[in-house]
Image (tube, rainbow, N blue to C red; front, side):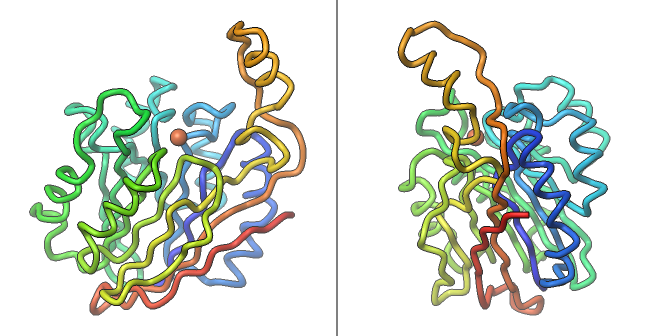
Length: 259
Ligand SMILES: [Fe+2]
């Protein structure tokens, strides 16, 4: 079972590089499942229905989210209509059922769970308790392949999640910082891990945003609305191989591609 996971798709430049590279990536890696974090897909904040439809056409099967997912209220309708659109399930009681989904892949069912960290995020429940509840729940307890996106600011929160769930989930990928980390590995217990996959957006930016408007804000204290950086984007992703019989991962490969 091969999963392609695409890091935070940021605005139009991010969606454009996905469009330009997806056929090539599908041909090269032949993934059974494509998951993308799309919390920044529309103007850097949330994902509208139009962006969801655009990215679905590219072959993305499951969408994860983060702190910006709730920035566009239509996401609630989208998640009700499409169970493959997720947001962090520990963000609020009302969202718990939208934090996980079981995808019936050609290699067998795989559970995808989306949680958010607590550091620098507005009050959210424990991601550790939430993930424990979900993987022990009726729908997931017999699903051996389990993929987790933890959307978090602090590297330690992601490492803590790995130590708590090592060998009990197949994959833990970190998202949110937009900066890829060089620690991709598979543990002895078979969990593939990376602290942060990085961003699918313009690298010569301030984490996806136009530097000029961000600097104007920093220098004056005036809350100028941020703008998505223009230019050529880089796609950052990981390719993970999972044994469908045991749920153990065998490899994780970080990618950075330009179109
Ligand atoms: Fe985020």
